[in-house]
Length: 225
Length: 224
Image 1 (tube, each protein chain N blue to C red):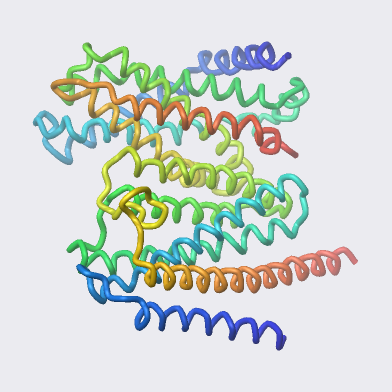
Image 2 (image 1 turned 60 degrees about the horizontal axis):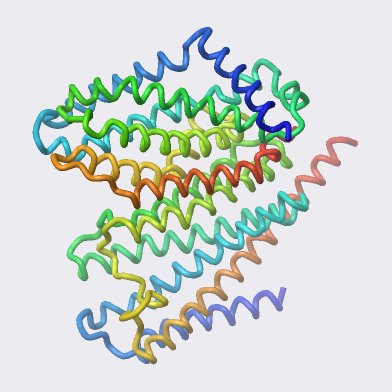
């Protein structure tokens, strides 16, 4: 109990420190000024969300391969947490876009594909609620999770071929892209903080799911007696 | 290597079942017709402007129709209790999927080709010059829709609210198909038609990726 609280406090500290760094340590951007500082939150949350979905994908694969209930629990936990982070991205995006581009939402490829990604994982969680049998639910949702994750790079690939208003990837985006060194440091610190938060949330959600399945098992045993 | 002969026999069975009643084809054709007519009320369908978004409407209609069309794909097997027999009859369960994907691609392609002239007349788009390219795009997109859709209909058939669930699972997954085929079709409908190879390649990549995924994971979809 104490250990978990300590870890939680540390994660909270990291997130607070990254917020401080993005407001006071990172230099001001030339054209967007203070507005650009939401980037450290927006993009870091996006990276953390993607990592969570990747964890979900790996858990799905492991479930199909090993048929161990714990991989199913990890799958649903990481999908929910990833969804929370992508929701943050979809909310902070328009907040940034309104003053920067003049509109809250543009139907460009990257925004739209993030939205589609969000919908795919909503469908994943919805599918889980519609199958009663535990093993079947675990297997079928794992398979859908795999298909959905395979679909993600294809959806994102659309940016390369069809026009987009979103800035070209700033990090690892090819020649001409790149951040000023301090900005890059602050950004990677934010990414680290967001990942710490993500891992913490997945661990907590996993614990909850584990308790839930244990209770389910006990209830079934009690009914059998 | 009994995969292809097995799949061919099963494909024959799928085609026989459908062409005996022609239920699927007729209802899908009527559905798309209704959608195309309803779309025409939302803007001026003969204007030059319509050339720009007509392809999108066409593909949206196809996509919605396919989400209905793929519904009975596994549901029928389940309701008639024929799924176990089907599974026992082949050594590789991929043959079942291969046959169903082929049949669904064929059905979709047939409805699309049947509706294309009607659509062209109603929305005033010239198609004769680019017909062979359109057939290629229709084929690649239908293959992609059927591949992903067949896999997902095997999932949705085992859940509650299955009629509503299949479109929910399918439509977001198929956005790449919608985007690519709309872009390619749009270029083909222009006054100076051009073939957009990136779009065609994109559709082919989608097909290959999902066929591979189905080959790898298909057998798990049919587990009891």
